[in-house]
Amino acid sequence: MEYKDYYKTLGVDKKATQEEIKKAYRKLALKFHPDKNPDNKDAEAKFKEINEANDVVGDPVKRKKYDELGSNWKQYENMGGQPGGGGNPFGGGGGFSGGFGGGGGDFSDFFEQFFGGGGGARGGGRQRARKGQDLQTEFEISQEEAYYGTTRVIQLENEKLRISTKPGAYDEQQLRIKGKGGAGSTPATAGDLFVNVRVRPHHRFTREGDNLKTNHEIDLYTAVLGGETLVETLTGQVKVQIAAGTQATKTIRIKSKGMPVYGKAETFGDLYVTLKVLLPTNLADKQKELFEQLRALNS
Image (cartoon, rainbow, N blue to C red; front, side):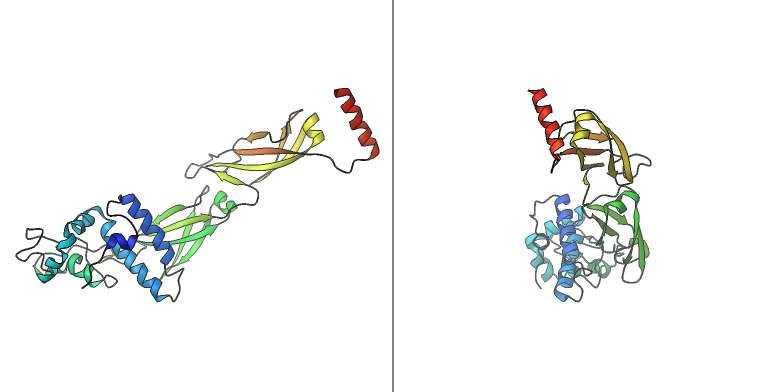
């Protein structure tokens, strides 16, 4: 039986932090998820390997026992996988009894023999309930949908699940749906579903936190003399006063016209508008004459 190097499976170092392991697992799970690789048996097998690895080293308690096993795994196998039998490399009658939360049909023989809890059952102890696998998926929304909130329907294996986002949803946000992951040994131990939100870039607005940034053009005469201009926001146009003598590339702030602050009702970021002054072209002779007069007066 082949030894399973779960760190290698996840592409992390043995000294990796739990957060680094979690990040690596999520990245790989998204890459090899069956929804992204339909009818791809290799991707399906890889997805199962990733989940098995995360089931062990993604849990600090299970990871500690796995690290303790280390090079002793062959000795443990030669004992017939009896964690309670004499010579258990970790001592004591409990050993690995249920310590890794049970196996399941999607786990390898290596996992089942060493961490599946079967040895504990043979020893007469009670097997610990097995938690189902956490699953991942994602969906994409527009910036407008992120502003107002929206709903998507996700097709799971046996049901359709309606997922809603609140106003102010942001790119790479992760939603956790408890109990909608893989089946556990009991309904109460089902895994969770993690939904990653992707927000498409907007053609006009750039988001920074809860604030938005945009560019807006004004004509030379408004920049010099001052006046009003209509600025686009995600909720429509707003009238903005332009001060006389406004310089090109000046940035003005429009309060509360940014994104809603997620989870805080009636709280918004700001909109930062960078002004760009358009110079007149194709001037008539009279216009050129007037500009010449202005230049003469200025000099």
